[in-house]
Image 1 (cartoon, rainbow, N blue to C red):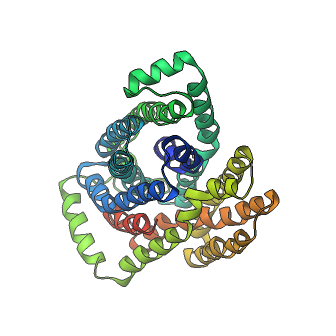
Image 2: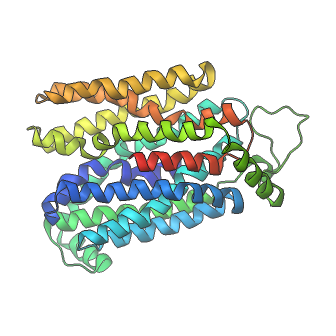
Image 3: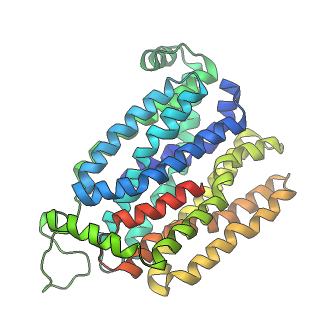
Length: 373
């Protein structure tokens, strides 16, 4: 959960940086949106590769690579001066790290639970929703402090190699400070992570005492992964899950990225607009936690249907939203659907595929998600 929080915080909090990028660089919302589209698309494209790396070489090694790429990409983004650099560093390079901390990490957690997987997955998924709650105030503070403090400006110039002042300096600091701090946190968290229970002589939670302690990774697992993937691709469920993830993410992408900008352009203050995003994040965090538990207990289909409906119907409010209460009502209703729409997929994979190595399969589903975004 700590690794998911550290890796996803900047992406999940990016909505508050969109207006600042427009003001600092003079880029249009379309230029910035295309950079985000690249990141989501490439994180989706890299999803099967990341899942294969985790299944083939172990999740722990793969995540160390992800932590290194994450730090490099964030520092390079802080040095950007042209939009094509934003596309390359933030859109493409960072997406590889995002794929690693979305796919192999999620698949690894499923190996630790035979019972109460919904609770374990709820904790993991809700940590991603906590990201904006922790990092929106932090990023706003970084932007303000590095924009106003003379000594902080000098530090920023030394790291980025770019002379900047005011909001521009604060914006750059938001990338390199969270990038370096997040990369260090990821490295520390990986130290305490194990790919599977058998790696330290344990059985999955809920396993009976007479079950053997069996390694999933290794040479045998590599063959097993390849055979399972070939079989899964011949089932309708494999392709249907990719399609569901595609359409679900296509349905919330614009709101996740541009919610703050929409609210500001409708007349809300910067603080009130950021508050709309925070409220949506709080509600989605609760549903990210609750939906996997409900899906594990009652089945995924009905739970997912409710979430998809609540991701769609509240959009009607935005056609006439100008008052602050309308935006906050939208944030509550949409947050329920948005948080629950994606968080049940690991549970669905367990219900469909049992104890099979699902890293690569889940990676294909995340490819649908990323391209949908």
